Length: 235
Image 1 (tube, helix red, strand yellow):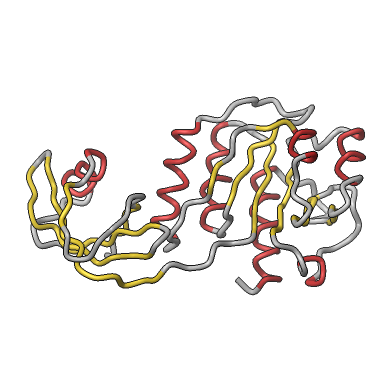
Image 2 (tube, helix red, strand yellow):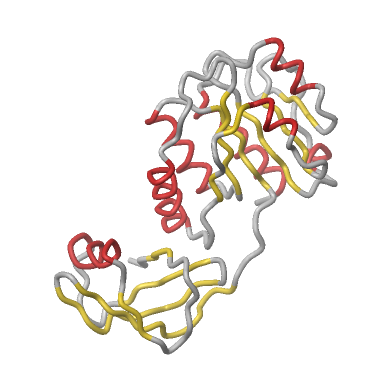
């Protein structure tokens, strides 16, 4: 099995390094690796084949052998998601990472019941999903922001893809063209208020679209929207 671990700091071939306490615990107690075992480390600069050269119960040292994957261009897809409860939010973080988003923006709207996000836990989930999905860079996870502030700060080069339960329009390939970034906006359980919907639709680059005839849960809507956009972008 190809074990991949995220290493945020720079990596230099033919150098050695002690693993962090967390990574040491993982290779020793979870994966039960041995001296000489292979392991890959990756970050935004690429991926390196490595070998464990020293190992005991609380210390592990590796040697970075060779670069096996070059850095890749970052995704243009962002996800602005109204906060939901712990379990569905963790699913969203995991699946959004697997589906290649570059940025996750937690949003608070009028009908959002949850107002905070455990950032340490969120980043851990994103890193683990990055390791599992063969990506090189975990998505950026922004600070929690109120809907109005998010809309007012939206970059003019960003197309806002609004998953709107009231829309009859379907997303088309041309809707995704000529934009530096594509930001998918998913509402809370209970949807946006009429005033919020009006505010969203007033944004110049907003494109409302329908995901389904059915009412979808927030996590289902997120996965569906990301899959749809990936399909059109041929990702």
